[in-house]
Image (cartoon, rainbow, N blue to C red):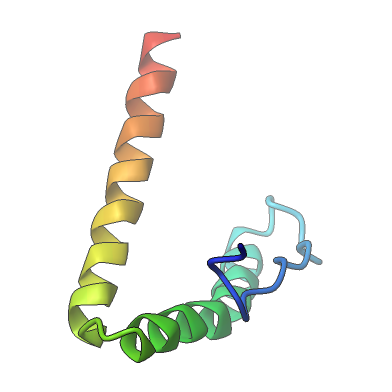
Length: 74
């Protein structure tokens, strides 16, 4: 069962990572509609949109922190 109906694949970047501002802005533009759809799906399922957004921020921060800690150990 596909739990993420409506969420497509993420297209590859057109800017190299060395062009940090263009790269980051492109990625934000890419993620914005995907995030909106994810929040729409959560809200349609009965979740509070603001709480869903807060949970996503927490999970993103936790993911970055865990990745950072893992790279510190290597």
